[in-house]
Image 1 (cartoon, helix red, strand yellow):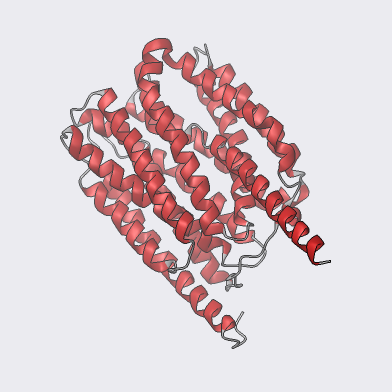
Image 2: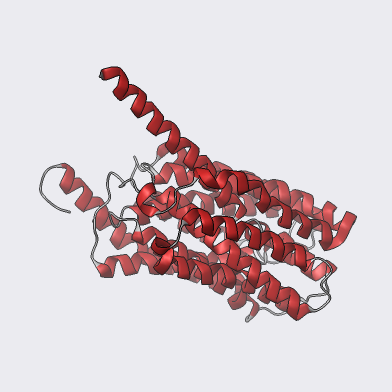
Amino acid sequence: MGQSITIEGTGAASNARVRLIAAILVGVIGPEVFIVQPGFVQGLVQNLGFDDQSAGYAASIEVWGITATTLVMTFFSHRFNWRKVITGSLLLVAVANALCIGVHSRELFVALRFVAGAGAGSLISLSFTTVGLTENPDRNFGYLIMWVLLYGAVVLYLMPAAYAFSGMTGVLAFFAAFPLVALPFVKLLPAGGEAAATVEVDAVDLPALLKALALLAMFAYFVAQGVAWAYLFLIGTAGGLTEQQVATGLTLSQVAGVAGALLPAIAGHRFGRWRPLTIGIAGGAFCLVFLSGRFQFLPFTLWVCLYNFFWNMTHPFLLGSMASFDRRGRVVVLAVAAQMSGLALGPALAASVIAPGQYASVNYIAIAMFALSWVCILPPVLIQQQRARSRQLGWGAS
């Protein structure tokens, strides 16, 4: 009897590990364009004749496509077979990117970017939700963000060489081919949320107002990221750096981001969440103060590395917090929608205030949104911590 229990437990752990690996692969493919958005925006300007503003709007349109499907999945994911949705979405992203090759109409190109984003949205929503329903979401979100960043580091570094060799064609061909890699792994993913659900140990059911504050914090934080991230490449070149210098700096920043994501992957939430969230949000805002004007390569690289470190330290703690605010995983699904809505609004908001070659206003907006995020996230995090501790002590709080 004891032996069979051990084998069963080992099998369950093995299945959970395989499912996590499959979810991480899909979670890397979902934001395959967004995570290298500075290089993609640069490619639109350099190779397809977009100006700064139209490139920002094109990037925003794609993220609005992502947002549209994350919102749909928020309300209807329980009605769909997740494996079928993921399979269809992988094919949709591949086809939309392939069709972008050779398109001469800017309007059609932008429309296809929306379609690609629509496919990516369900990949992001379902992969992130699957990870959020695991036993240790802070740690597992750290692993997911780490692999997304490793992908981004390699691709961002290679993009200038790819543009020089094949223009946008080679880059778009890669974005079309990469989703096909995940097709054999879809069968390892859950068919629905009930099959994936594992209640987080410290999860409590917070009141609706606190959940709303948490979702507003998620939205504001990713508005800030969408504002700043889309224009970092152009901020660097406007500051006097070459394209390859900026690409190298952003690649190194992805490596720094991996280090940031490793912190929650290693520590989980053993040190709480409000302290790392405060440090991460304040640190990101602080870095943006120095990312304007003229640059030398080393200072630019230092600040973008620190910025990405704080971003990717904060992100898993935010997602882990969302997983702890209810015991059914609904807040995680809503948080992914809020995240993508913020990322969609950010580039368009930035594009509406920039002047050619002048990006200080972009950073000011991002800093203000970081501050709003911090103000909104503290109350639910602190109250969740208090209630979880009370329940552990047997005081009956839920």
